[in-house]
Image (cartoon, rainbow, N blue to C red; front, side, top):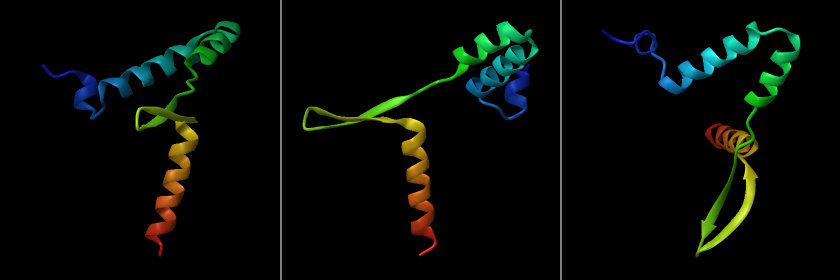
Length: 76
């Protein structure tokens, strides 16, 4: 028997994110606000070169700028 999330074409991580969002939205006001704050993520990464760590960058903003740069190059 296949899992319902797999049959719907979701990855397990995406399924968990959707389930967590549904649970957070079903809570009363104060617990909901606390749960939403816990659900926010701030991922950072750093590029390593020659054994030295580079500048820490926010993953979301770096991804957005890379997407914009890629869109600009594809239009040329």
